[in-house]
Image (cartoon, rainbow, N blue to C red; front, top):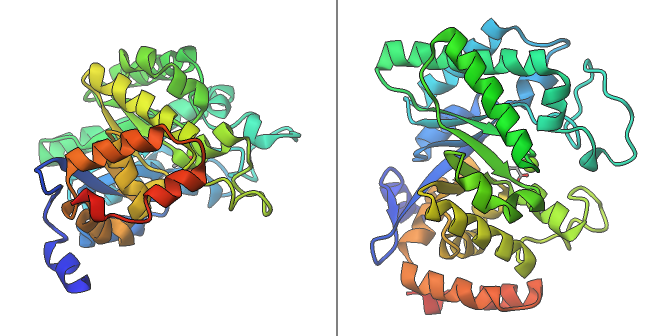
Length: 325
Ligand code: PEP
Ligand code: MG
């Protein structure tokens, strides 16, 4: 199996009946970009930029941020790169940033909420992304960068983030980049129809979407094993998201851990997800899983899963893949 995976790892993945699914990698540290490429990833669906802020003792300069991004763009050989603006707070504290103690950090000032509290810092991060885009356009005559905003719960948050990005872009006269939002809060999935009319793409953060849908802390030692992503409530939110996006001609990726699990990846493709962003090491095996099944059958099976009432029932349905060929 390994030999087959290796042989085909640089080829795109399509199902037995010819449905194409994009498989890309997640990057949380700069040195992971090269492994996305060597594993056959078609780009990066999520650059977690928190490392830029966590590793330093103060805010990294715009120049430092640009340099890191240029190196990643180069390691990816100009394949798609989705840069998520800093998702600080919650499980990702930053020691040098003053953050008031909170009783419920996961429900507190994190992600885009924190960015708006530190607007100048947010704009400097946007400036670094657009400067990297200017450099890429000059050096490679193309632009593979995308910008993704984390923890969007309301339409007004998306619009504010978009407007700030546009302000920074126009001041620099930088190329227009696709702008997307993370769907990782149930309210965002529930207004996907409205968001889809305005954004360029969605990226489902299944780690947070699971924790917020089930009200189970993703790091809680007694609960995290129960906070699984087979729950039909989560599946319905994902389906709402893909339906809304496709209705408006937009694409949907999944960048949470769910996408790296072969059984759940099949479920996601059946629910209409266009791109799976997985750990770099999982790229060849996820591509191979896609190649071994029929898309029509994946869709039929996902519709059955949506009718079930529990994670256990969905898990049992996905134990066996013989019915997908
Ligand atoms: C997610 O929530 O699924 C996600 C990809 O974001 P993070 O794990 O960085 O919160
Ligand atoms: Mg998240």
